[in-house]
Amino acid sequence: MQVKRNPNHEARLAKLTVRFASFEIQVPSHHPKANPRQPVKLQVILAEEEKPHPGVNPISWLLLTSLDISSFESAITCVRWYSYRWLIERYHFVLKSGCGLEKLQLETGRRIEMALATYSIVAWRLLWLTYQARLHGEESCESFLEEHEWQSLCATIHKKSPPPEKPPSFREAVRMIASLGGFLGRKGDGEPGVKTIWLGLRRLHDISQTWKLSHQISPP
Image (cartoon, rainbow, N blue to C red; front, side):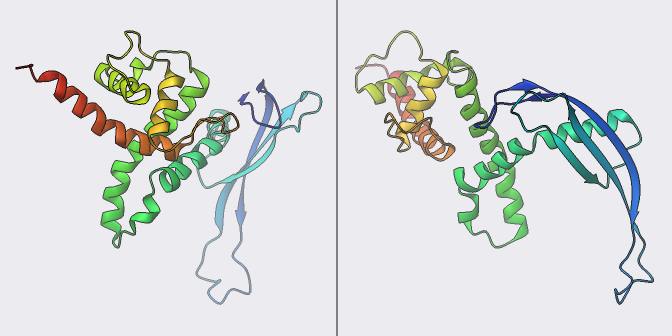
């Protein structure tokens, strides 16, 4: 399994030993309604790293699931899903803090579902932009910005027109977008977060549409 880099260790390829078994959790005998209740059947998966690198805390995961684990492949699937937990946690953070979903104060389940249908797409895009800028920052921004978008972005940030002929890199474009949302870009600020990127994207939408409209109008 590929282990991603974090502040505590470098990226590495880990070899895991995976075991799994089934068991039942009995209903507590002191429960007032114990008799009519049935035991809960669960699957347990133990994933342990073989020959870990020196100075690295080896992987040792004990996972419980109600999913049917009937083969080694299905056990590996659960382990792989668990390895994505940090990304899932980050996705929910983007929904809450980046998109401000919690602040909407929606009163009904139906309204929450409709908001999630929209903001889930937004959260995915924000998360993708954040990590793409860090992993593939030197690539062209044309993979996510149309011509009128990056042109209007450059003209606004640099306060001059016409914009450059060559589009900025992915990382440069994301930092410029974040600056529209309040990111200062000082030496100790690091890379922009999802909140400033989201605010910047909203501003860029209005700016780019105005730019596009103004360049479609023929001069008198």
